[in-house]
Amino acid sequence: MHEFFINYRTQDGKEAARTFDAELSNRFGTDSVFRAQKSIAPGTKWVDMLVGGVRRCRVLLALIGTDWVDAPHQKRPGRRALTDPKDWVRREIEEAFAAGALVVPVLLGRQMAQLDPLRLPASLKPLADCQYER
Image (cartoon, rainbow, N blue to C red):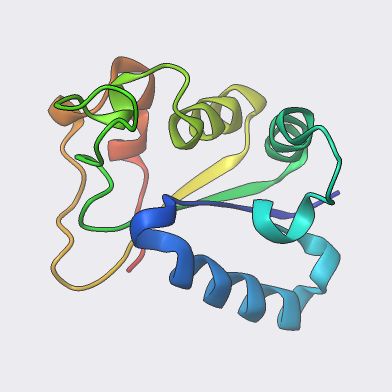
């Protein structure tokens, strides 16, 4: 069972995710941290691994960079990725809430403002009420 699940957008959180993974792995052991790029073996059904990893974790770290809320939808120009119920960042956080995991927003950088619940889909509004870290 992974204690920690690292949730991030590739565009603005990849490096931070690697850093968190390395630090948490050093402290708690490599098997205690789920980061998709590291934890899903080639040829594995990645959807099952992501959902299972979130459902079994105790803590989901939602790494939130300056472009996180407004990240563009890859297939629908002009729309935000978060508005799509199939967006993996969104789905992982929703799964963590449903599974009862502790969800910790980690704001990346001093410029990142606290989350505005009015800018989040209804299912993610509780994220704005979670105590965040920088």
